[in-house]
Image 1 (cartoon, rainbow, N blue to C red):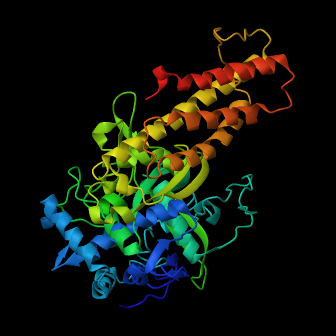
Image 2 (image 1 turned 90 degrees about the vertical axis):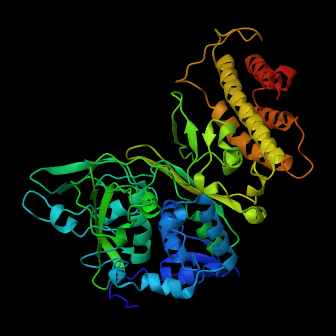
Length: 531
């Protein structure tokens, strides 16, 4: 394998990991695959980059993982799904990637320069044509700025300083390894709307579409080592994807012409790495150790090809169709567990395909890893997060139906108490602050959505951590009772009292408001409202 003179992602240490021994390390792609059985976790501190990286590693794992000459991305094996699962089983039993297969893939002549972050002709996941296409009316290069690349940095002259004192008037270079993380994050989670203009014809277009994972959350089955995690991350063949047409990832094929029709979605490479809506180009320092500038613009205006992402939950909308579950920075992972455990026919949510048909012998050792980015559909980024569950996939309905349905009951009770707490706290605020409101128990109260008051938010902030503690208590062995609502109602009552506070107990309106709110919560314990 010939190493390039730029920043070769095959050998440069750019992926932060934790070994099974507990030691931290930083590895390149070759070492990551060769030592995957020695690695416990990926520890890139930018969750949207980690979610994108997993989608890049999975098709490479499919190219490398094989048994008896049959690879996990073999279209002939994909014809029979049982044969494919049998092959995956044999790969898992091997316990590691074959080092010779790793060298064979990354040493391919046609990929010799494709993993170089700064190659002049084919930089990794970038489009070198932007040097001449992103120019102003006089033909002068018009880069987007390094702050535009790094998620969390302010952009523009008046950008808010939130995560560090960075401004476009004095940009701070980014280490090449970190630039690779943010490049991946932008391609998977980048914004829609106005962007750096790109001129291909006489028209200089300056707007684009949102990246394929924008405002979403991804769920992976997380094994005891990275080898297991990556093999399980390889999606099984999907009926909506083409596995007979030659599959390719961006680094394995020629640059796509932005004005032409998009290639078909093929399995597994284009499902995971072939749906980008942005084009990027990094500008390195003279020694190729940092990134000093960047171009970020649109890559296509063709309608995106529809395909099911294998790592997302789909929720049923009011019109009956399904859409990916949106990331919510205030929502803990345990609140999604029933959607990951129950069969699709049992609920208005569809389990991620990558969490279907997991090997039964591995289930007791499998956790769930979630990567999410709370964003709007256009430009606003709120918060990103990473969360990992305990070994809960042994509770999947196919393996333990009693426990799967118990988890559903617990979650339903928690959500019901949370919704009622939200309503009760708003009603209490209305009674306490509006003298025209009748506080009697049967009086109807009309709430103003624009004036919810502070008690609801404060109460929910108190409630959800306690509810999570109660949830894990109820899911311990021996706690599979049908009556699971009381602990959550009691947690809601305590959160309500904490939000209203002790100082106002002498106020008769506050006392009546508290009583009315507590009555609404206690009504959840009546037989007509229990499971």
